[in-house]
Length: 342
Image (cartoon, rainbow, N blue to C red; front, side, top):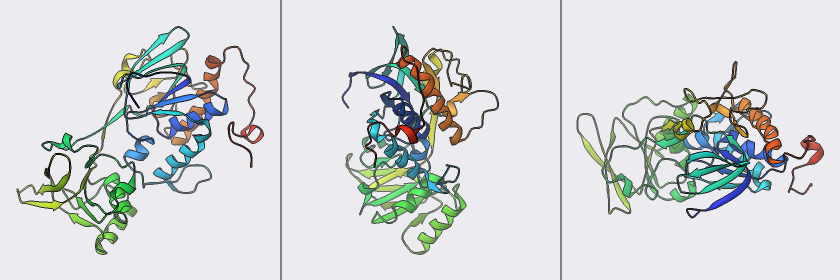
């Protein structure tokens, strides 16, 4: 995606997590085109960035599926509607432009939309970077804060740093892909799901993962383009070098509401107040769904976010097609627009 492009669409969805993705489906069923914007370089929000292998149990008709599987299914579900993604960039401005809204991203892209659905979760995510000299030189090539393509690590020597779900989950998931996996953590105890920790120790016992404990990151070795090793040290100063092609650093993501505070939506404490039946904000044509939307007695469940996406899409129809009445039909009757029936 080049910079300084202009687009026009029916609905702009801010946030490509599960609720934002489902909002695209609901809009698509009403024949509304969508563009999605997300600060992360991959879709899926927290599910992709923090716990892709973590099981989810409260999705209807899916007794258990991983967060990554949920994102993949939602992605396939919206494919017939051909949404356009603008990833690795943040919406920095939202302002009224006649009968549309104009969004400007951090890459200079402008998107005009008749309605906006804010599905930004807790806000824009950014990685908590370890304080290592010259780390920026390797970011995106050899230093990673999330995994978007497992195959790129096939046959590679990996150092994974962290003690939470993402570090443990990716160590397990990549044990079959990588030539070597070293998991660096500053203490014996991991802050991950118990079943994941049990699986981790099983792979350690099998020699497929090496634990580097109690150590923390101390430095990088390489030519400024390619990584050759990662330096780690204990609190007592004992240092060792681990040969490595890639460093995956999982120290969590910093969240911030950022520019949303300046959009006149009444955001407070990371929440935008909405009307429960439509998820409408105080700005006409702007809706908020998911964790960022607030109203009395709300249940913060992914199921709630999915329902809010449906409410918002139906309410947005009046802004996209002001001269049309919405005659809603069930998907079993209408099918999915753009997909031929079997």
